[in-house]
Amino acid sequence: MDFQNILNIIHKDCNRIENHGKIANYIPELAKVDPDKFGMFLLTNENESYEIGDSQEKFSIQSISKVISLTIAAELVGQDLWKRVEVEPSGTPFNSLTELERDKGIPRNPFINAGAIIIADVLLSVLDDPINDFLTFIRKLAGDDDIYYNEKVAESEKDYGYRNTALVNYMKALGNIENDIDDVLNFYYHQCAIEMTCEQLARTFSIFANAGKKISSKKQVISAKSVKRINAIMQTCGFYDEAGEFAYRVGLPGKSGVGGGIVAVHPTAYVVAVWSPKLNEKGNSNLGIHALEDLTNLSGLSVF
Ligand SMILES: NC(=O)CC[C@H](N)C(=O)O
Image (cartoon, rainbow, N blue to C red):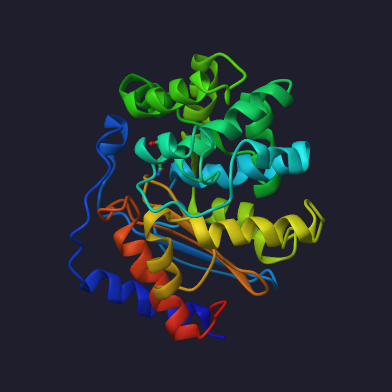
């Protein structure tokens, strides 16, 4: 497969179309990013890589971090995790309050904000030094120590995180949060504020394309069974109330973040990360989805 040629075609196509998306500005620090950035990095299971545009520039991974926190929690806690959060798609936006009330404080899935806050609470209870341990785990997956928290982004989100504060308070009131709410939010805002390049993200997520083994070292990091489950949750919940549309247009499990990043995996062939900061009305990268749709159409490689 001539992936480089395909990426070059995608790059040209993405330069041509008019992008009506809007950069996330509810976290003021994110609104400072150049909206026209565009990068993509693809890594095959044969450890061959291809890239275009700003693929080596760091950006805020935001909700993409929720997949990594779930991975750690699932390994450490096992089945009991699912008493506190479900695995059903949400039909509402990622920061919805109404759905949480209907669901009696048990979030629909670990990728909406309420569910990720539950996972953050779990990690706070089971890790010795959550903020450091989380970063160490990501660096290990990426095979790269040049990955850091952006404290300004974490601080900016804390200053304006009214909705997340409402979610965590509501869940605390219903007995589904164990730790102090400020500590839970502080950890959650840090995990979201990690900055990575498209290459680092693709390498981090390579375990999900390769039955739990890192593509570069072939080391087994998590079980193939966990990968099957987490990929299923990415497929059904990775794009909030746009998960169906993403499955229809792209046809890969994946996860987006309001920093404009998307990671998607073909469970037996490749992992791809794309970054374009302007978001559609569902909070997912507008051009990112377009690029991934081109990729699966041109390569013929989706899960469907
Ligand atoms: N969809 C996202 O990337 C949202 C993450 C963001 N940190 C928030 O809590 O709102």
